[in-house]
Length: 467
Image 1: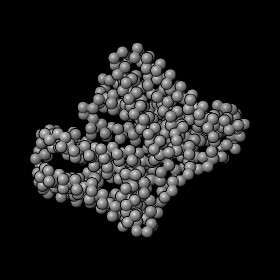
Image 2 (image 1 turned 30 degrees about the vertical axis):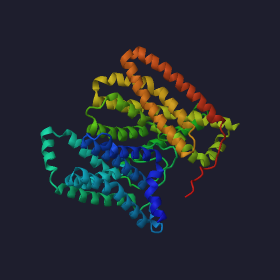
Image 3 (image 1 turned 180 degrees about the horizontal axis):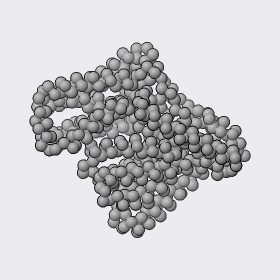
Image 4 (image 1 turned 30 degrees about the horizontal axis):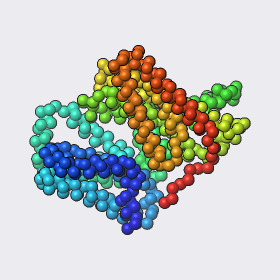
């Protein structure tokens, strides 16, 4: 029983901030009829659906974190997981469907049961990283491109009570597919470096249980070939004529092997494809500066590899320390922190690609202003973001708070810079934004660099949490 309770509460304990936000959203949707008795039923259903969707996505992330072949060897693991899933289905699927049925009629409740099961499956597919989730996005894209007269015909068919039953059957089949993909029989290989950039097909430091298809394997092999060739060229140049510049270049390549043209192209193709799919599905009516601000966050994600990778790299730093043979520990940490600057070109170029892609999809006429905003803001913003990620604390809550504040600051800074350039012009507004942004970025970088160099040097791995 104790294992069942732990598995049931595990999604809420792994992300307490997200759980609190979802609880507020669900509670507000349930209290809305009491606060506003004349409110429309559609708004209540939408809020309930959005809250439940995010809740089940949270459960999908948790399921992926425990989805390893060795977990199946635990005593009564399948029974405990099935019991926890049954409790979740009772509280977050059957009871909401009963509430909808009692308030809006049996047909709405029947749709909440069948359509809710299909939506839950989609949330699990999306959050668990299963590539079959792309079919859900394709449904949204097709629905967004259908003519209005055809949509009206499809809405009239929704009164058929057999459709929710078909959705329920489809959800059962897809859930079985999710289980087989999350618990494969083979054991995937570990990443070769803690500083691998996060991509939709691979997460830094994680053991993905999902086998890559042939296209992804070929693509990753193509990237790895580029990494090896670049490393061999720089090593040969350093051996032929050693120097501090070539030593810093070789150190950057060793720490960040994917920060090269092939690695950048891989991120641009994958993230750019996902962004294009999202804009095709939901892009109508969206403001270009809002979406461009969010894409800057995706461009800066790779900078967080420093904060995530340094604790895991501590045991390997000992070998690197003896290879470099620095005179003092401060000299060694100075070389490390200077090598972190090799992450900036990829982040800056990625911001150009993503914001330009958003402008081409949503507002081609605003392309010049979007690229001007990116030019003015992103370089100092990338430097400041790297400075913040470089000294992240090891506490989970503190890291989460800093990450959320950093993401919010990136998006708000882009919006404010776009508005500044829009009202004052590119020359005046851009010059003012450049002065403010670079003053903040340089001050933040100097303080963070000094703190990193003066902080103690550890070679021990991070302490694992009990349990």
